[in-house]
Length: 179
Image (cartoon, rainbow, N blue to C red; front, top):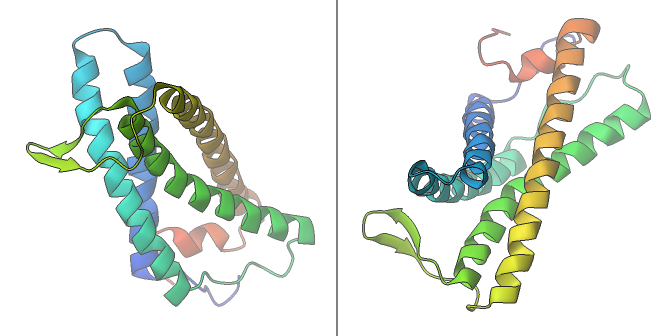
């Protein structure tokens, strides 16, 4: 990537903020299912509004990406790596949309209130149904593992570009590098 094409400031900000939020969500989710202590309610009270925040931010991010397409990948990349990059980004965006929607639907099917903060609640998006809740809970868990694996692959590719290829791909998203 000679000439240093970069993502816009808004794209970079959304990327890094969402990366931190999603990693926090994954670890909070693990903590929620692994604890029976009084901390469970605290974790839930953080997890739900963060999920909705991520849903809102991914909508903003998709709109931003439509108006500000990413810089081109280096020409030296083989076709399979270009395809893998595009496919992994599609999977990431799909999961960033699906996870909060499935969580919201899961809570709706369970009949739980979706509390954002204090008296601010979201309406249910699905009918109360125990079987639907169970299916959505399994899907939410499975997709969380898939999201974690996809993030690890994304991180691995980013590090490959930063440390091995040194082709500017990582620098195009690194907010601390100047063009």
